Length: 298
Image (cartoon, rainbow, N blue to C red; front, side, top):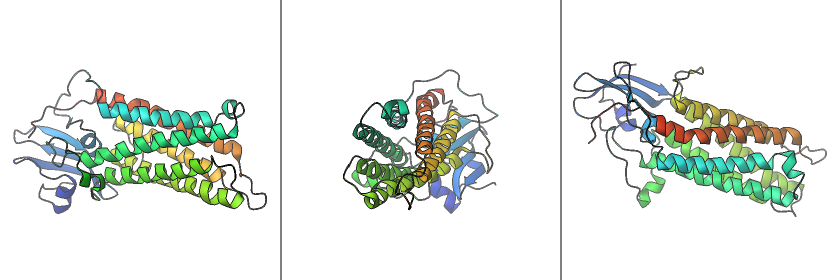
């Protein structure tokens, strides 16, 4: 779809297009602007994507341009996100291994998951923080975070929704995993304080992952743009599906009050955590391999 830079919806999602620049092509997912082909006054074309914009990776090169050669140093934010998501994933993967939970007490296993959920929440906040401080204009520097920026309302951005929903999911996991450290809960309390928040967190992760995947995927069917960001989003989506399977398997049977399928719970949790771990490891790789076309900054 071709669009002019003056479109009201477009300027909300991608504001302040430099004078003389124009939008050649626009791509949307779920109604959100996710990708643009831009033409500079000299006729050169650049690609803007929502993910690159949020992660301060600059404008991408189109077919008319040669991408920059070599690799740069990973950004500090990518290292923090990789460390926090990675440690959280390792905690969840470890806690779901029979070799671990058969060797230690149930309380230690429960605290392992709770500690992991805290790392997930820290990483979730940083991911949301990225969307808040993302530059307001295509060629502008990142915004400084002020107090009001902590709750900045940006519903026109798909990444803002993905980050917010993911953060809500991590908080639900905090509630669920902390309740699991309490040993005096009866079956009803376990259902409401452990399983229900776990389901809520899994649903939030799934919705956030779908939005993050739609942000980088070309079209409805899986279609890679050969970027590291696409692989990360695909891994996170796969991990969220695995967490969802684990949450369903963790439901309490009304007849016995026991977990429906503890083996599937552990398998889904382990597979999902490993997928998140690999995605976390790739974050600094994405940052270092970003090949941005040379473009002026204001």
